[in-house]
Length: 341
Figure (tube, helix red, strand yellow):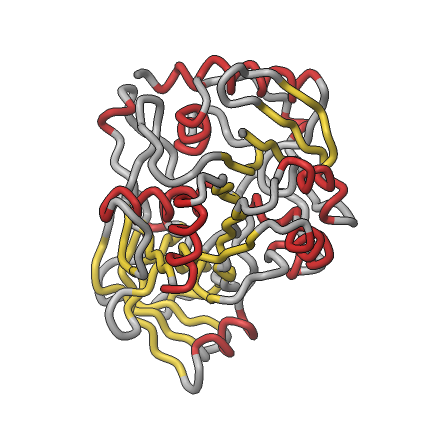
C-alpha cells in the first residue's frame, strides 16, 4: 500500500490547541468496524458501548517533563533536547535541535549545570545518545527544569501540565501522552466499573515513533521504532478470562493496542511480560487481542491512521474522517475521540 492512500484534507482550524475544561465532555464518533456506520455521541456515552464482562485496557504510562532548554558548553549556543528512551545507566536516546551543533564528546548544560548531557553517539534525523550527569535524583531535576513535550502542532502554552497526563498515569517514562486516555475522569472510570466492565492497565512508554513521520512511499518498507512495554500477571490473567468468556477487549489508544497485540501474537495468550516492541499494524493485519478501540483523530499519512484502518477498513476510516471534518470534530492530542467497535 502507498502512503498517499492514507491522506485526507484537514483544515488547520480543526487542530485542537487546548484541552476542554471537562475531560469527558469531548465528542465521540462511533464507527461500526464492519459496516462503517457512524453515530455522533459525546464521550460520556462511551459507557453505553461497553457490556458487563468486557474489559477496558488503558496505558498507565506517565509523561516526563522531558523537553529541556540549555546551552552548548563550548560556545553558549542555545540547544533544545527532548529525552526519549533510557539506555544503559544514565545514557538516553534524545532528539537535539539544532542537531548539527552537537557532535561526539560535546556537552550541553541545563539549569546552569544542574544537568550536563554529553554526546556519546550520533544517530539519524537529529537523534543522539547523551550521557547525563547530575546531582540527586534525575526525576527531581526534570521536574525543576523540564517542560511537557507537547507535539509541534500545538502552538498554545499549556498552563496546567496535568492536562497532558491521564488521570491514571503512574509509570514514569513517556515522551508523549497516550492521548486517547485524556478523556477519562476518575468518576467515569468508576461508573464503567459499576456497570460490570473490567478496567485493566498495561504500560507502554511512548518514544521516538510518535515524533517520526513515515518517510517511504511503500508502507511495507517502514520500520517502527522500538518502545518498552510491560504487562502484569494480574492483567494477563484477567484478559485471558475475558477472552475465554467470549467478551470484548476494548483498547484505549494505539499504544495499548500495540502492547496487547505484541504480547498475544508472541504467546497465543496473554502473559506477564516486559520487553520492546516495534510492531507495525496496518491493513491486512489480523488482530489477535482486541475487539474494539477508543482513539483520537490522527495525522494524515501517519502510522496511527494506518493502525485504525486495519481494525475496520481504509475506506471506512477515511469516510469517518471526512465526516469528522465536515462535522468540525477537534483533531489530534487535545481533540475529540472515536470508538471503533
